[in-house]
Image (cartoon, rainbow, N blue to C red; front, side, top):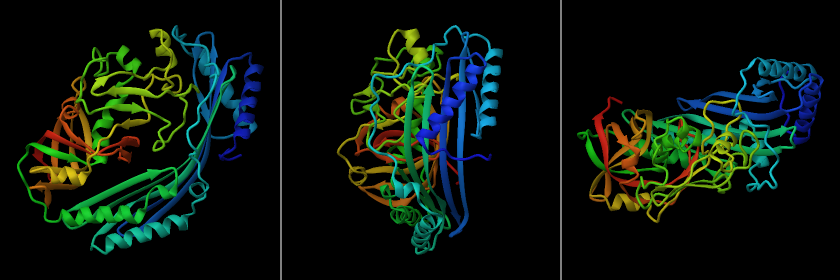
Length: 454
């Protein structure tokens, strides 16, 4: 039987029962099963034409036994009886060959209650057809062509059905649809970009996004070059996500134990400005993702930063047991080396708009987004990277020219201590960082180190 999509909680439960039956035949009574079913479709375009449409349906069954203080995992993308039997045998064999883990806990127990987020599966998104995406892409391309530019990007739609079961009674289920649209408008010597995502097709408008990208490319034609240095910057939400999003893997109890977090000896300390408050909140209506972690433990809302002070970190079950606290529901699937991390970041906002930030700036730089970001100093959280797809000079409260892109060398602690104005937060997409809810920020003394060739 070829790979298929379960897309059915009842079928996922049947697979679990089959796994349990096979495991008991081998004398194994503790077992965890994850059934992850996805339907994903993607329409890709470049040079003002659609050139690819692909679709994939898959189900991955992942099996993790616990035997005498040992655990391991095996997976298959086939759900027929013989494949299930083989993956159970493989998982048991790997587990018995593994070294005992003194810190390994028994399987998770079911929660007394499991709060569910608002409905995140929507039929029009799940049932979007290639011609639906093609029509939207064609309209977006016409907007870019109307500016004498060239468009490239993607439009994807899909749905995910996730189930985690174990023999202690955990039965965690989640269903979600997701649509994403990204477009880059390219001119002779400039470019513009826009991207959005949402559980509903109506959460964004591809034509409006195309207009934003084309407008940025048009306004940044014949870019000027100004010297590097420290400038007041207006970071649009995508730029805030690109840089601030780099730090949240450090809000992890396991990372602190391993001394690989910039928060070592800093939890409870004031690191950022008074206007910086950050939560991890899977139930925020602008967020997406399952309300439970890789072991089926319910996610808790965390206050990571409150008025600049680091307050809470994420705990998986193992780290929580070592610390004598309750897990927060942010653990990765076991076994893993990393423990846990926040997954649903919401950075608190303010009352300013990007337009008001521009109007209040005598001389500064407006940044659409960042890329090629690399860490320079892990403890001080200093990063280098480059601007791209819409970098502008602001003079006397207005945008006066496009700029050649810069390389920056900037510490996050310093940046989030120098925020002078914040917009309302919005769901925001980047290239490498998962989606977050973040605001735009007006930041003083942002450090640009050189003008790039791009």
